[in-house]
Length: 245
Image (cartoon, rainbow, N blue to C red; front, side, top):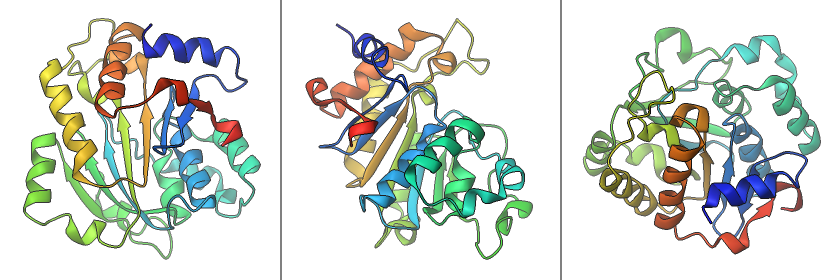
């Protein structure tokens, strides 16, 4: 049975749907990428990561819309995990989850790996959050990520930092409009990219969005997820709900 089918069946038993984790590897998988914000806060609360972690964001999109901060300034003051979960449910969207984590000091520097058209580090963004400087690096391909790592350009961002890999499987869909006719990258390229990501750092936390609507539907998303499960050597029998982590 494919892993996404198992997730769907599991999700039907859970109030929150397909939000599961593998605590032995600190890997959290979700349908909607917005939940990454909550997971990062959960991981910080449980000392899985330290504050001001470095985020490596591998995604077809930048997911860097900051407007949730203006609309919900109370995000800075929320302390209880249950309140953070409600805030995520009610106010965070699939493209606004990075900025509130940055504003709260849960993440700091960000390495974007995305071929999306806009640029994340424009002038307006640098001091958008008072008292914090929005900095990092941006590359468009996995080969460029490997290049900047090998050339030492990432070193200052990862030394003595907790490291989060934030992956959206739609990174491997080359169809810009994400309709029902996906153009997935060749399996060999997907395997090679995921293998590199797995081994390049000792990740403290990994969050993965399935995003079937951006992968061309459940079948291609399932295919990509099966490859991820294989490469990261995940034991499906160990999946549990976030609610009992």
